[in-house]
Length: 279
Image (cartoon, rainbow, N blue to C red; front, side, top):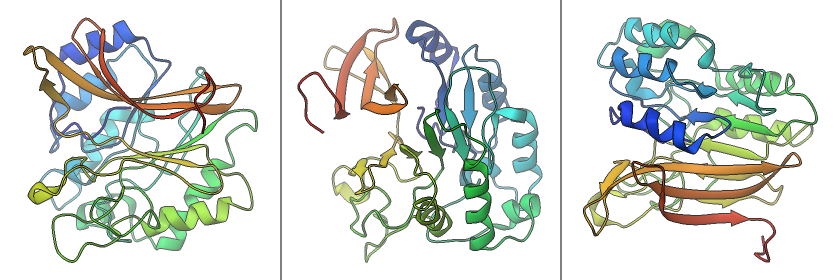
């Protein structure tokens, strides 16, 4: 998973992905402020890709034209309210509401110009309906820009508001509603999102990026921003979040920082099944 890019993407990322050879790459949105060059670069990747657009992807355009252009460029790669169709891998990725900025449920003028008037209930129903298209023996992953409400109301929680007091839950209500309804049908193994950056504002520390609920669903915030940096030896590092499935079940989640040649410089393991490591 590639967290909020905010314009930080180049040919070096494509080369790195070729070295890593993952089965698929998921983009959680905020690719840029409407830069078509970056969007086009993603469409040229040789690896299967799924994308959900974020609030920054509409640029500064309130008309919705830039947002629609991004959707058009991505084509089938953009999976808002539908399953991402591909031949391989056997992974059911369902996109949630595009263009969200968190905070419950709100459609910006640009997003509303593209998707039309929409209620929280209608958006939740679209997510649930799209999940029904995923084969029963495939893992189910929800791809969102903002995570759901219900993961905590402290600034450092996965969707906690950290830029303004008081801290509060800044997740998406429609995603939470969809998950509640999926309890009676089929819970996803993974909900991956971004929007709320790992580094908190005003030197408040680091955000909690992982949560596993009582149903076994894992929530992962992939928004490491900036996603490039240097290690102690001044070597360039690039962040990706990484998950692995086996026999239809999620068995590994980590944040990883790679060197340009694909070598793993550092990994923060968040969840691991097997190898003597407990849940």
